[in-house]
Length: 289
Length: 331
Image: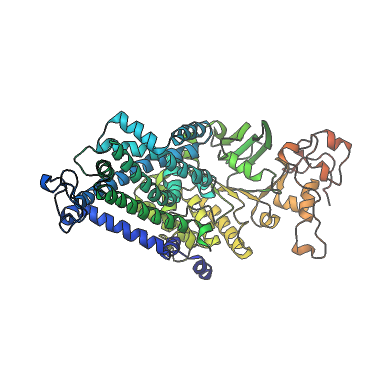
Protein backbone atom coordinates (compact mmCIF):
# COMPACT_ATOMS: atom_id res chain seq x y z
CA UNK A 1 0.00 0.00 0.00
CA UNK A 2 2.95 2.36 0.56
CA UNK A 3 3.63 2.38 -3.19
CA UNK A 4 0.21 3.87 -3.86
CA UNK A 5 0.80 6.49 -1.23
CA UNK A 6 4.16 7.57 -2.56
CA UNK A 7 2.86 8.07 -6.09
CA UNK A 8 0.28 10.64 -5.08
CA UNK A 9 2.41 12.38 -2.48
CA UNK A 10 3.11 15.49 -4.54
CA UNK A 11 2.71 18.50 -2.34
CA UNK A 12 0.56 21.17 -3.94
CA UNK A 13 2.17 24.32 -2.53
CA UNK A 14 5.60 23.39 -3.88
CA UNK A 15 4.17 22.81 -7.36
CA UNK A 16 2.56 26.23 -7.22
CA UNK A 17 5.80 27.81 -6.08
CA UNK A 18 7.63 26.08 -8.90
CA UNK A 19 5.12 27.38 -11.43
CA UNK A 20 5.45 31.02 -10.60
CA UNK A 21 9.10 31.08 -9.55
CA UNK A 22 9.96 30.07 -13.11
CA UNK A 23 8.23 33.19 -14.38
CA UNK A 24 10.86 35.98 -14.79
CA UNK A 25 8.15 38.66 -14.55
CA UNK A 26 7.35 37.42 -11.06
CA UNK A 27 10.92 38.08 -9.98
CA UNK A 28 10.95 41.55 -11.59
CA UNK A 29 7.70 42.47 -9.82
CA UNK A 30 8.91 41.04 -6.51
CA UNK A 31 12.22 42.90 -6.77
CA UNK A 32 10.58 46.26 -7.56
CA UNK A 33 8.05 45.85 -4.78
CA UNK A 34 10.75 44.81 -2.32
CA UNK A 35 12.73 47.98 -3.13
CA UNK A 36 9.66 50.17 -2.66
CA UNK A 37 8.80 48.51 0.66
CA UNK A 38 12.37 48.88 1.96
CA UNK A 39 12.39 52.55 0.93
CA UNK A 40 9.04 53.15 2.66
CA UNK A 41 10.04 51.34 5.86
CA UNK A 42 13.44 53.00 6.19
CA UNK A 43 12.33 56.41 4.88
CA UNK A 44 13.94 58.43 7.74
CA UNK A 45 17.30 56.76 7.11
CA UNK A 46 17.22 57.04 3.33
CA UNK A 47 15.68 60.46 2.74
CA UNK A 48 18.46 63.06 2.20
CA UNK A 49 16.31 65.93 3.57
CA UNK A 50 13.35 66.54 5.86
CA UNK A 51 10.31 66.20 3.57
CA UNK A 52 8.51 69.05 5.34
CA UNK A 53 11.44 71.48 5.64
CA UNK A 54 10.77 74.56 3.51
CA UNK A 55 13.60 76.50 1.91
CA UNK A 56 12.36 79.62 0.15
CA UNK A 57 15.81 80.37 -1.25
CA UNK A 58 15.94 77.05 -3.10
CA UNK A 59 12.39 76.89 -4.48
CA UNK A 60 11.71 75.20 -7.84
CA UNK A 61 15.33 74.12 -8.20
CA UNK A 62 15.84 71.65 -11.09
CA UNK A 63 17.42 68.28 -10.34
CA UNK A 64 20.98 68.75 -9.12
CA UNK A 65 23.61 66.97 -7.06
CA UNK A 66 22.11 68.31 -3.82
CA UNK A 67 18.45 67.86 -4.79
CA UNK A 68 18.50 64.78 -7.02
CA UNK A 69 14.86 65.19 -8.12
CA UNK A 70 14.76 68.99 -7.66
CA UNK A 71 12.69 71.03 -5.20
CA UNK A 72 9.08 72.15 -5.14
CA UNK A 73 7.31 75.48 -4.80
CA UNK A 74 8.26 75.74 -1.12
CA UNK A 75 11.84 74.57 -1.63
CA UNK A 76 11.12 71.06 -0.23
CA UNK A 77 13.23 68.19 -1.53
CA UNK A 78 11.17 66.21 -4.06
CA UNK A 79 13.14 62.98 -3.55
CA UNK A 80 12.60 63.04 0.22
CA UNK A 81 8.91 63.75 -0.24
CA UNK A 82 8.68 60.86 -2.72
CA UNK A 83 10.33 58.52 -0.22
CA UNK A 84 7.96 59.52 2.56
CA UNK A 85 5.04 59.46 0.11
CA UNK A 86 5.71 55.76 -0.51
CA UNK A 87 4.68 55.13 3.11
CA UNK A 88 1.26 56.68 2.58
CA UNK A 89 0.65 54.94 -0.74
CA UNK A 90 1.64 51.51 0.51
CA UNK A 91 -0.19 51.93 3.79
CA UNK A 92 -3.38 53.10 2.14
CA UNK A 93 -3.15 50.34 -0.46
CA UNK A 94 -2.41 47.63 2.05
CA UNK A 95 -4.85 48.57 4.80
CA UNK A 96 -7.68 49.39 2.39
CA UNK A 97 -7.24 46.07 0.60
CA UNK A 98 -7.07 44.19 3.90
CA UNK A 99 -10.36 45.75 5.00
CA UNK A 100 -12.00 45.20 1.59
CA UNK A 101 -10.75 41.60 1.52
CA UNK A 102 -12.13 40.80 4.98
CA UNK A 103 -15.53 42.35 4.37
CA UNK A 104 -15.78 41.29 0.71
CA UNK A 105 -14.83 37.67 1.41
CA UNK A 106 -17.31 37.44 4.27
CA UNK A 107 -20.11 38.83 2.10
CA UNK A 108 -19.18 36.64 -0.87
CA UNK A 109 -18.89 33.42 1.13
CA UNK A 110 -22.12 33.95 3.06
CA UNK A 111 -24.05 34.94 -0.07
CA UNK A 112 -22.68 31.98 -2.02
CA UNK A 113 -23.22 29.48 0.78
CA UNK A 114 -26.70 30.56 1.83
CA UNK A 115 -27.82 31.18 -1.74
CA UNK A 116 -31.42 31.88 -2.69
CA UNK A 117 -32.99 35.25 -2.04
CA UNK A 118 -30.14 36.52 0.16
CA UNK A 119 -27.64 35.79 -2.59
CA UNK A 120 -29.76 37.61 -5.18
CA UNK A 121 -30.19 40.60 -2.89
CA UNK A 122 -26.53 40.91 -1.94
CA UNK A 123 -25.22 40.38 -5.44
CA UNK A 124 -27.76 42.91 -6.77
CA UNK A 125 -26.48 45.44 -4.25
CA UNK A 126 -22.89 44.72 -5.22
CA UNK A 127 -23.77 45.14 -8.89
CA UNK A 128 -24.97 48.63 -8.06
CA UNK A 129 -21.64 49.31 -6.32
CA UNK A 130 -19.75 47.88 -9.29
CA UNK A 131 -21.66 49.98 -11.78
CA UNK A 132 -19.94 53.10 -10.43
CA UNK A 133 -16.39 53.64 -11.61
CA UNK A 134 -14.10 53.08 -8.62
CA UNK A 135 -12.84 56.64 -8.74
CA UNK A 136 -16.31 58.18 -8.81
CA UNK A 137 -17.46 56.01 -5.91
CA UNK A 138 -14.32 56.81 -3.92
CA UNK A 139 -14.85 60.47 -4.69
CA UNK A 140 -18.41 60.41 -3.38
CA UNK A 141 -17.47 58.59 -0.20
CA UNK A 142 -14.36 60.67 0.44
CA UNK A 143 -16.34 63.86 -0.14
CA UNK A 144 -18.99 62.71 2.33
CA UNK A 145 -16.49 61.70 5.00
CA UNK A 146 -14.03 64.54 4.56
CA UNK A 147 -10.32 64.52 3.73
CA UNK A 148 -8.14 62.51 6.10
CA UNK A 149 -5.92 59.46 5.90
CA UNK A 150 -8.48 57.34 7.74
CA UNK A 151 -11.39 58.41 5.54
CA UNK A 152 -9.30 57.89 2.41
CA UNK A 153 -8.68 54.29 3.49
CA UNK A 154 -12.38 53.76 4.22
CA UNK A 155 -13.40 55.22 0.86
CA UNK A 156 -10.97 53.04 -1.09
CA UNK A 157 -11.89 49.95 0.95
CA UNK A 158 -15.57 50.40 0.09
CA UNK A 159 -14.84 50.72 -3.63
CA UNK A 160 -12.95 47.40 -3.53
CA UNK A 161 -15.46 45.32 -1.56
CA UNK A 162 -17.59 44.29 -4.53
CA UNK A 163 -14.85 42.63 -6.62
CA UNK A 164 -13.64 40.68 -3.57
CA UNK A 165 -17.16 39.49 -2.83
CA UNK A 166 -17.53 38.28 -6.42
CA UNK A 167 -14.21 36.44 -6.38
CA UNK A 168 -15.11 34.74 -3.08
CA UNK A 169 -18.68 33.89 -4.06
CA UNK A 170 -18.02 31.92 -7.23
CA UNK A 171 -15.72 29.27 -5.67
CA UNK A 172 -18.01 29.10 -2.62
CA UNK A 173 -20.89 27.98 -4.81
CA UNK A 174 -18.67 25.30 -6.33
CA UNK A 175 -17.20 24.27 -2.97
CA UNK A 176 -20.50 23.94 -1.14
CA UNK A 177 -21.47 21.09 -3.45
CA UNK A 178 -18.16 19.34 -2.87
CA UNK A 179 -18.29 16.02 -1.07
CA UNK A 180 -16.15 17.18 1.83
CA UNK A 181 -18.56 20.01 2.61
CA UNK A 182 -21.52 17.61 2.55
CA UNK A 183 -19.45 15.17 4.60
CA UNK A 184 -18.78 17.98 7.07
CA UNK A 185 -22.49 18.67 7.35
CA UNK A 186 -23.08 14.96 7.83
CA UNK A 187 -20.68 15.14 10.78
CA UNK A 188 -22.83 17.86 12.33
CA UNK A 189 -20.70 20.93 11.52
CA UNK A 190 -22.65 24.18 11.65
CA UNK A 191 -22.75 26.66 8.76
CA UNK A 192 -20.25 29.06 10.36
CA UNK A 193 -17.71 26.29 10.83
CA UNK A 194 -18.27 25.00 7.30
CA UNK A 195 -17.76 28.45 5.83
CA UNK A 196 -14.80 29.44 7.99
CA UNK A 197 -12.89 26.19 8.32
CA UNK A 198 -13.81 24.26 5.20
CA UNK A 199 -14.65 26.77 2.48
CA UNK A 200 -12.47 29.82 3.25
CA UNK A 201 -9.10 28.00 3.28
CA UNK A 202 -9.94 26.47 -0.09
CA UNK A 203 -10.51 29.78 -1.83
CA UNK A 204 -8.15 32.08 0.05
CA UNK A 205 -5.32 31.59 -2.45
CA UNK A 206 -7.49 32.93 -5.31
CA UNK A 207 -8.44 35.93 -3.22
CA UNK A 208 -4.90 36.73 -2.07
CA UNK A 209 -3.62 36.54 -5.62
CA UNK A 210 -6.30 38.89 -6.87
CA UNK A 211 -5.62 41.25 -3.99
CA UNK A 212 -2.19 42.17 -5.37
CA UNK A 213 -3.87 43.34 -8.58
CA UNK A 214 -6.44 45.33 -6.65
CA UNK A 215 -3.81 46.83 -4.40
CA UNK A 216 -2.43 48.43 -7.55
CA UNK A 217 -5.83 49.86 -8.32
CA UNK A 218 -6.20 51.04 -4.71
CA UNK A 219 -2.90 52.90 -5.00
CA UNK A 220 -4.09 54.49 -8.24
CA UNK A 221 -7.35 55.54 -6.62
CA UNK A 222 -5.44 56.98 -3.68
CA UNK A 223 -3.29 59.05 -6.03
CA UNK A 224 -6.34 60.19 -7.98
CA UNK A 225 -8.24 61.24 -4.87
CA UNK A 226 -5.18 63.04 -3.52
CA UNK A 227 -4.81 64.74 -6.89
CA UNK A 228 -8.35 66.07 -6.60
CA UNK A 229 -7.65 67.21 -3.08
CA UNK A 230 -9.71 64.58 -1.26
CA UNK A 231 -6.68 62.66 -0.01
CA UNK A 232 -4.42 63.13 2.96
CA UNK A 233 -4.34 66.85 3.82
CA UNK A 234 -1.09 68.79 3.37
CA UNK A 235 1.68 69.02 4.34
CA UNK A 236 1.93 65.20 4.54
CA UNK A 237 3.58 64.17 1.27
CA UNK A 238 1.65 61.72 -0.91
CA UNK A 239 2.32 60.93 -4.53
CA UNK A 240 -1.11 62.08 -5.67
CA UNK A 241 -0.93 65.45 -3.89
CA UNK A 242 2.65 65.97 -5.15
CA UNK A 243 1.42 65.59 -8.73
CA UNK A 244 -1.40 68.00 -7.92
CA UNK A 245 1.04 70.61 -6.56
CA UNK A 246 3.44 70.04 -9.42
CA UNK A 247 0.65 70.49 -11.92
CA UNK A 248 0.54 74.24 -11.21
CA UNK A 249 4.12 74.62 -12.38
CA UNK A 250 4.22 71.89 -14.98
CA UNK A 251 5.59 74.18 -17.71
CA UNK A 252 8.44 75.59 -15.60
CA UNK A 253 9.25 72.64 -13.37
CA UNK A 254 8.54 69.31 -15.10
CA UNK A 255 10.23 67.32 -12.34
CA UNK A 256 7.48 68.12 -9.84
CA UNK A 257 4.83 66.06 -11.62
CA UNK A 258 7.00 63.58 -13.50
CA UNK A 259 8.83 61.92 -10.58
CA UNK A 260 5.75 61.14 -8.45
CA UNK A 261 4.01 59.89 -11.60
CA UNK A 262 6.93 57.57 -12.24
CA UNK A 263 6.79 56.37 -8.64
CA UNK A 264 3.12 55.45 -9.05
CA UNK A 265 3.82 53.81 -12.37
CA UNK A 266 6.61 51.65 -10.98
CA UNK A 267 4.59 50.59 -7.92
CA UNK A 268 1.49 49.73 -9.94
CA UNK A 269 3.63 47.91 -12.49
CA UNK A 270 5.35 45.87 -9.75
CA UNK A 271 2.03 44.85 -8.20
CA UNK A 272 0.52 43.97 -11.57
CA UNK A 273 3.53 41.87 -12.58
CA UNK A 274 3.36 40.05 -9.27
CA UNK A 275 -0.40 39.59 -9.48
CA UNK A 276 -0.31 38.35 -13.06
CA UNK A 277 2.44 35.85 -12.28
CA UNK A 278 0.54 34.56 -9.25
CA UNK A 279 -2.69 34.33 -11.21
CA UNK A 280 -1.01 32.44 -14.03
CA UNK A 281 0.52 30.09 -11.49
CA UNK A 282 -2.77 29.13 -9.86
CA UNK A 283 -4.67 28.90 -13.14
CA UNK A 284 -3.78 25.50 -14.61
CA UNK A 285 -5.11 26.54 -18.01
CA UNK A 286 -2.48 29.28 -18.24
CA UNK A 287 0.21 27.15 -16.63
CA UNK A 288 0.56 25.06 -19.78
CA UNK A 289 0.65 21.68 -18.07
CA UNK B 1 -44.68 -7.09 15.53
CA UNK B 2 -44.57 -6.56 19.32
CA UNK B 3 -42.02 -9.30 19.79
CA UNK B 4 -39.44 -7.39 17.72
CA UNK B 5 -37.04 -5.04 19.52
CA UNK B 6 -37.47 -1.35 18.78
CA UNK B 7 -35.83 -0.46 15.46
CA UNK B 8 -32.68 1.69 15.54
CA UNK B 9 -34.04 3.72 12.67
CA UNK B 10 -37.57 3.58 11.34
CA UNK B 11 -38.61 5.16 8.04
CA UNK B 12 -42.35 5.52 7.62
CA UNK B 13 -43.77 6.62 4.27
CA UNK B 14 -40.77 8.83 3.61
CA UNK B 15 -41.38 10.96 0.53
CA UNK B 16 -38.73 13.27 -0.88
CA UNK B 17 -39.39 15.48 -3.87
CA UNK B 18 -37.23 17.45 -6.28
CA UNK B 19 -38.28 20.51 -8.17
CA UNK B 20 -37.96 20.52 -11.93
CA UNK B 21 -39.19 23.76 -13.39
CA UNK B 22 -42.31 24.61 -11.40
CA UNK B 23 -43.26 21.06 -10.53
CA UNK B 24 -42.26 18.84 -7.65
CA UNK B 25 -41.51 15.24 -8.53
CA UNK B 26 -40.99 12.49 -5.98
CA UNK B 27 -37.51 10.91 -5.96
CA UNK B 28 -38.30 8.78 -2.92
CA UNK B 29 -41.88 7.53 -2.90
CA UNK B 30 -43.36 6.50 0.44
CA UNK B 31 -40.46 4.38 1.60
CA UNK B 32 -41.12 2.46 4.80
CA UNK B 33 -38.37 0.32 6.23
CA UNK B 34 -36.95 -0.40 9.66
CA UNK B 35 -33.31 -0.79 10.54
CA UNK B 36 -32.95 -3.10 13.51
CA UNK B 37 -30.19 -2.75 16.14
CA UNK B 38 -26.92 -4.30 14.94
CA UNK B 39 -28.45 -5.06 11.57
CA UNK B 40 -26.95 -4.36 8.17
CA UNK B 41 -29.63 -3.43 5.70
CA UNK B 42 -28.48 -3.16 2.12
CA UNK B 43 -30.31 -0.87 -0.28
CA UNK B 44 -29.74 -1.86 -3.88
CA UNK B 45 -30.91 -0.52 -7.19
CA UNK B 46 -29.73 1.09 -10.39
CA UNK B 47 -28.49 4.66 -10.59
CA UNK B 48 -31.42 7.03 -10.16
CA UNK B 49 -33.52 4.64 -8.10
CA UNK B 50 -33.48 6.93 -5.03
CA UNK B 51 -30.99 5.05 -2.83
CA UNK B 52 -28.72 7.98 -2.04
CA UNK B 53 -31.61 10.43 -1.78
CA UNK B 54 -33.12 8.19 0.90
CA UNK B 55 -29.91 8.30 2.93
CA UNK B 56 -29.49 12.06 2.46
CA UNK B 57 -33.13 12.55 3.47
CA UNK B 58 -32.54 10.72 6.75
CA UNK B 59 -29.86 13.24 7.72
CA UNK B 60 -31.64 16.09 5.92
CA UNK B 61 -28.58 16.90 3.84
CA UNK B 62 -30.38 17.64 0.59
CA UNK B 63 -29.93 21.14 -0.83
CA UNK B 64 -32.54 23.57 0.54
CA UNK B 65 -33.39 24.90 -2.88
CA UNK B 66 -34.91 22.32 -5.15
CA UNK B 67 -35.47 19.47 -2.69
CA UNK B 68 -37.96 18.88 0.11
CA UNK B 69 -39.16 16.09 2.36
CA UNK B 70 -42.83 16.15 1.52
CA UNK B 71 -44.10 13.61 3.99
CA UNK B 72 -43.44 10.70 6.24
CA UNK B 73 -41.41 10.18 9.36
CA UNK B 74 -37.85 9.20 10.18
CA UNK B 75 -38.01 7.86 13.72
CA UNK B 76 -34.77 7.70 15.67
CA UNK B 77 -34.73 7.11 19.44
CA UNK B 78 -38.32 8.29 19.74
CA UNK B 79 -37.84 11.53 17.75
CA UNK B 80 -39.01 12.31 14.25
CA UNK B 81 -35.94 13.64 12.43
CA UNK B 82 -38.09 15.20 9.70
CA UNK B 83 -39.57 17.76 12.09
CA UNK B 84 -36.47 18.36 14.22
CA UNK B 85 -34.97 21.87 14.26
CA UNK B 86 -31.75 22.42 12.32
CA UNK B 87 -29.89 22.94 15.61
CA UNK B 88 -31.11 19.67 17.11
CA UNK B 89 -30.44 17.96 13.80
CA UNK B 90 -26.77 18.98 13.87
CA UNK B 91 -26.35 17.27 17.26
CA UNK B 92 -27.67 14.07 15.65
CA UNK B 93 -25.48 14.30 12.56
CA UNK B 94 -22.09 12.73 13.06
CA UNK B 95 -22.91 12.07 16.71
CA UNK B 96 -25.79 9.56 16.66
CA UNK B 97 -26.07 8.96 12.94
CA UNK B 98 -22.97 9.19 10.77
CA UNK B 99 -22.54 8.87 7.05
CA UNK B 100 -19.74 7.83 4.73
CA UNK B 101 -19.67 8.72 1.08
CA UNK B 102 -18.85 7.20 -2.24
CA UNK B 103 -15.99 9.33 -3.43
CA UNK B 104 -12.99 9.12 -1.09
CA UNK B 105 -10.89 11.40 -3.28
CA UNK B 106 -13.12 14.43 -2.68
CA UNK B 107 -14.73 13.67 0.68
CA UNK B 108 -11.87 15.13 2.73
CA UNK B 109 -10.97 18.80 3.03
CA UNK B 110 -7.72 19.23 1.07
CA UNK B 111 -6.52 22.10 3.27
CA UNK B 112 -6.69 20.32 6.64
CA UNK B 113 -4.52 17.56 8.03
CA UNK B 114 -6.21 14.20 8.43
CA UNK B 115 -5.70 14.29 12.20
CA UNK B 116 -7.33 17.70 12.51
CA UNK B 117 -10.32 16.59 10.47
CA UNK B 118 -10.98 13.59 12.68
CA UNK B 119 -10.34 15.63 15.83
CA UNK B 120 -12.77 18.32 14.64
CA UNK B 121 -15.73 15.96 14.78
CA UNK B 122 -14.74 14.78 18.26
CA UNK B 123 -14.29 18.32 19.58
CA UNK B 124 -17.68 19.43 18.29
CA UNK B 125 -19.73 16.61 19.73
CA UNK B 126 -17.68 15.49 22.70
CA UNK B 127 -15.84 18.65 23.74
CA UNK B 128 -12.62 18.19 25.70
CA UNK B 129 -9.18 19.49 24.84
CA UNK B 130 -7.44 19.50 21.48
CA UNK B 131 -4.81 17.14 22.83
CA UNK B 132 -7.40 14.57 23.87
CA UNK B 133 -9.17 14.84 20.53
CA UNK B 134 -5.88 14.35 18.66
CA UNK B 135 -5.09 11.33 20.83
CA UNK B 136 -8.51 9.88 20.04
CA UNK B 137 -7.97 10.63 16.34
CA UNK B 138 -4.72 8.69 16.49
CA UNK B 139 -6.47 5.75 18.16
CA UNK B 140 -9.15 5.78 15.45
CA UNK B 141 -6.58 5.92 12.64
CA UNK B 142 -4.87 2.91 14.14
CA UNK B 143 -8.23 1.19 14.55
CA UNK B 144 -9.03 1.53 10.85
CA UNK B 145 -5.56 0.08 10.22
CA UNK B 146 -3.73 3.02 8.72
CA UNK B 147 -0.07 1.95 8.79
CA UNK B 148 2.23 4.15 10.91
CA UNK B 149 -0.80 6.14 12.03
CA UNK B 150 1.23 8.41 14.29
CA UNK B 151 3.24 9.95 11.48
CA UNK B 152 0.28 10.06 9.10
CA UNK B 153 -1.84 12.04 11.55
CA UNK B 154 -0.29 15.31 10.41
CA UNK B 155 -0.40 14.57 6.69
CA UNK B 156 -2.83 16.05 4.19
CA UNK B 157 -5.47 14.04 2.27
CA UNK B 158 -3.56 14.26 -1.03
CA UNK B 159 -0.80 12.21 0.58
CA UNK B 160 -3.25 9.31 1.05
CA UNK B 161 -4.42 6.76 -1.50
CA UNK B 162 -8.12 6.23 -2.23
CA UNK B 163 -8.51 3.20 0.05
CA UNK B 164 -6.69 4.99 2.87
CA UNK B 165 -8.87 8.06 2.48
CA UNK B 166 -11.96 5.89 2.72
CA UNK B 167 -10.54 4.48 5.97
CA UNK B 168 -10.01 8.03 7.21
CA UNK B 169 -13.64 8.78 6.31
CA UNK B 170 -14.70 5.73 8.28
CA UNK B 171 -12.57 6.86 11.22
CA UNK B 172 -14.26 10.28 11.11
CA UNK B 173 -17.70 8.70 10.96
CA UNK B 174 -16.91 6.45 13.94
CA UNK B 175 -15.31 9.23 15.98
CA UNK B 176 -18.41 9.82 18.10
CA UNK B 177 -19.59 6.20 18.31
CA UNK B 178 -22.78 6.65 16.25
CA UNK B 179 -25.73 4.28 16.70
CA UNK B 180 -26.42 4.20 12.97
CA UNK B 181 -23.99 4.37 10.06
CA UNK B 182 -25.27 5.34 6.63
CA UNK B 183 -22.81 4.05 4.03
CA UNK B 184 -23.48 5.47 0.57
CA UNK B 185 -21.62 3.18 -1.86
CA UNK B 186 -18.46 3.38 0.28
CA UNK B 187 -16.55 0.84 -1.78
CA UNK B 188 -17.74 1.67 -5.29
CA UNK B 189 -14.77 3.91 -6.10
CA UNK B 190 -12.19 1.45 -4.76
CA UNK B 191 -10.50 -1.38 -6.60
CA UNK B 192 -11.61 -4.90 -5.78
CA UNK B 193 -8.91 -5.92 -3.29
CA UNK B 194 -9.20 -2.69 -1.32
CA UNK B 195 -12.98 -3.03 -1.54
CA UNK B 196 -12.83 -6.40 0.18
CA UNK B 197 -10.56 -5.05 2.92
CA UNK B 198 -12.81 -2.07 3.59
CA UNK B 199 -15.92 -4.26 3.67
CA UNK B 200 -14.36 -6.67 6.15
CA UNK B 201 -13.27 -3.76 8.25
CA UNK B 202 -16.70 -2.15 8.22
CA UNK B 203 -18.20 -5.43 9.36
CA UNK B 204 -15.68 -5.74 12.21
CA UNK B 205 -16.20 -2.15 13.30
CA UNK B 206 -19.96 -2.55 13.15
CA UNK B 207 -19.66 -5.46 15.59
CA UNK B 208 -17.17 -3.65 17.81
CA UNK B 209 -19.19 -0.44 18.02
CA UNK B 210 -22.61 -2.12 18.10
CA UNK B 211 -23.94 -0.07 15.20
CA UNK B 212 -26.72 -0.58 12.73
CA UNK B 213 -25.72 0.02 9.15
CA UNK B 214 -27.69 1.15 6.13
CA UNK B 215 -25.49 0.10 3.23
CA UNK B 216 -26.26 1.56 -0.16
CA UNK B 217 -24.79 -0.17 -3.15
CA UNK B 218 -25.55 -1.31 -6.67
CA UNK B 219 -23.21 -4.25 -6.32
CA UNK B 220 -25.08 -7.44 -5.43
CA UNK B 221 -21.81 -9.21 -4.70
CA UNK B 222 -21.17 -6.72 -1.92
CA UNK B 223 -24.72 -7.26 -0.67
CA UNK B 224 -24.16 -10.99 -0.38
CA UNK B 225 -20.99 -10.39 1.61
CA UNK B 226 -22.18 -7.81 4.10
CA UNK B 227 -25.97 -7.57 4.42
CA UNK B 228 -28.49 -9.18 6.74
CA UNK B 229 -31.51 -7.90 4.86
CA UNK B 230 -31.91 -6.28 1.47
CA UNK B 231 -34.26 -3.58 0.19
CA UNK B 232 -34.42 -3.42 -3.59
CA UNK B 233 -35.35 0.04 -4.82
CA UNK B 234 -36.75 0.98 -8.19
CA UNK B 235 -37.86 4.45 -9.28
CA UNK B 236 -37.96 5.77 -5.71
CA UNK B 237 -39.83 2.93 -4.05
CA UNK B 238 -38.98 -0.36 -2.40
CA UNK B 239 -40.05 -3.18 -4.71
CA UNK B 240 -38.76 -6.05 -2.61
CA UNK B 241 -37.60 -6.45 0.96
CA UNK B 242 -36.19 -9.74 2.21
CA UNK B 243 -33.36 -11.37 4.09
CA UNK B 244 -30.25 -11.72 1.98
CA UNK B 245 -30.62 -15.53 1.78
CA UNK B 246 -34.27 -15.39 0.71
CA UNK B 247 -33.58 -12.70 -1.85
CA UNK B 248 -30.76 -14.58 -3.56
CA UNK B 249 -32.50 -17.97 -3.34
CA UNK B 250 -36.00 -16.91 -4.23
CA UNK B 251 -36.36 -13.44 -5.74
CA UNK B 252 -40.04 -12.51 -6.03
CA UNK B 253 -40.00 -9.30 -7.99
CA UNK B 254 -39.16 -9.50 -11.71
CA UNK B 255 -36.77 -6.58 -11.26
CA UNK B 256 -34.82 -8.36 -8.50
CA UNK B 257 -34.67 -11.48 -10.62
CA UNK B 258 -33.40 -9.46 -13.57
CA UNK B 259 -30.75 -7.80 -11.37
CA UNK B 260 -29.56 -11.21 -10.22
CA UNK B 261 -29.37 -12.51 -13.78
CA UNK B 262 -27.31 -9.42 -14.70
CA UNK B 263 -24.74 -10.23 -12.03
CA UNK B 264 -21.75 -12.53 -12.63
CA UNK B 265 -21.86 -15.48 -10.22
CA UNK B 266 -19.17 -17.99 -9.43
CA UNK B 267 -21.74 -20.75 -8.84
CA UNK B 268 -23.33 -20.40 -12.28
CA UNK B 269 -20.34 -20.15 -14.54
CA UNK B 270 -22.04 -21.35 -17.70
CA UNK B 271 -25.00 -19.02 -17.77
CA UNK B 272 -24.59 -15.87 -19.81
CA UNK B 273 -25.35 -12.53 -18.21
CA UNK B 274 -28.59 -10.88 -19.19
CA UNK B 275 -28.79 -7.10 -19.34
CA UNK B 276 -32.08 -5.45 -18.32
CA UNK B 277 -33.51 -3.67 -21.35
CA UNK B 278 -34.48 -0.01 -21.02
CA UNK B 279 -33.55 2.29 -18.16
CA UNK B 280 -34.94 3.70 -14.91
CA UNK B 281 -37.69 6.22 -15.73
CA UNK B 282 -36.83 9.87 -15.13
CA UNK B 283 -38.32 11.68 -12.14
CA UNK B 284 -40.97 13.38 -14.23
CA UNK B 285 -41.88 10.31 -16.27
CA UNK B 286 -42.72 7.60 -13.74
CA UNK B 287 -45.56 5.44 -15.15
CA UNK B 288 -48.91 5.51 -13.31
CA UNK B 289 -49.11 1.79 -12.79
CA UNK B 290 -46.14 -0.35 -11.79
CA UNK B 291 -43.00 1.72 -12.38
CA UNK B 292 -41.17 -1.33 -13.69
CA UNK B 293 -43.92 -2.41 -16.10
CA UNK B 294 -42.36 -0.94 -19.29
CA UNK B 295 -39.27 -3.11 -18.81
CA UNK B 296 -40.98 -6.17 -17.36
CA UNK B 297 -41.32 -9.37 -19.41
CA UNK B 298 -44.15 -10.64 -17.16
CA UNK B 299 -46.42 -7.61 -17.29
CA UNK B 300 -50.12 -7.96 -17.95
CA UNK B 301 -52.82 -5.33 -18.45
CA UNK B 302 -53.35 -4.59 -14.77
CA UNK B 303 -49.65 -3.66 -14.36
CA UNK B 304 -49.92 -0.50 -16.42
CA UNK B 305 -53.15 0.59 -14.72
CA UNK B 306 -52.89 -0.27 -11.03
CA UNK B 307 -50.03 0.81 -8.81
CA UNK B 308 -49.09 -2.30 -6.81
CA UNK B 309 -48.64 -2.21 -3.03
CA UNK B 310 -45.73 -3.64 -1.09
CA UNK B 311 -47.30 -6.78 0.41
CA UNK B 312 -46.17 -9.98 2.04
CA UNK B 313 -45.11 -12.61 -0.46
CA UNK B 314 -46.30 -15.42 1.78
CA UNK B 315 -42.91 -16.07 3.36
CA UNK B 316 -42.47 -14.27 6.70
CA UNK B 317 -40.55 -11.02 6.42
CA UNK B 318 -40.45 -11.15 2.63
CA UNK B 319 -42.30 -8.21 1.06
CA UNK B 320 -42.79 -7.67 -2.64
CA UNK B 321 -44.47 -5.06 -4.79
CA UNK B 322 -45.74 -7.25 -7.61
CA UNK B 323 -49.16 -8.91 -7.77
CA UNK B 324 -48.33 -10.93 -10.88
CA UNK B 325 -45.34 -13.01 -9.85
CA UNK B 326 -45.29 -13.49 -6.11
CA UNK B 327 -46.01 -17.20 -6.08
CA UNK B 328 -43.00 -19.47 -6.10
CA UNK B 329 -40.50 -16.81 -7.08
CA UNK B 330 -39.25 -15.68 -10.46
CA UNK B 331 -36.61 -17.86 -12.04
